[in-house]
Image (cartoon, rainbow, N blue to C red):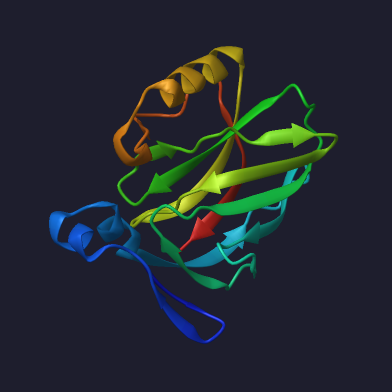
Amino acid sequence: WIEIVGGVLLIVGAVANLTTGGDVLQRLFFWSHEIRSFSDDPEFAITAMYDRFGRTLTPGSRFSYRFGVPLSARGVTDLADTERVWAVMWDEYGNYYLQYPPVSIRGRHWNAVSLHPLKGIIEIVFVKVDQAGDASLTQQAGVSQPSGDWRLAALPPNSEVVAYVELR
């Protein structure tokens, strides 16, 4: 992959993979986004998002997402540690993409560590699910999918959107 770190251009990867379509090609793809807004429900509040360099992302922040290098988010919540919340990406065509692992909730704080806003994603949605919804999403996440493409036809029944990040 190609990256600028501290003013230095880094080029990493095998040239052979560039011609054979290997993993290096996927690492070259970037998608540019801007954070338009965070939802503001105190029951599940987003307090911070971070890019691959650890920079804080806030509404108005622009960032480039590189395939395979996730964003992270965290916040505070009134939900119990036993509640289950999953992050899903929602694209411009109405498709949902499951993010794994599910959101971790511990002592009124939550953390999401593997957010992948690929091309066409317009929202990162945090969804509270019941036991059946959690079992369904856990089963789907356990199914081996190429390149982590866990497309959902719809959100599970009885699920509730508790927070979102709107992207442009």
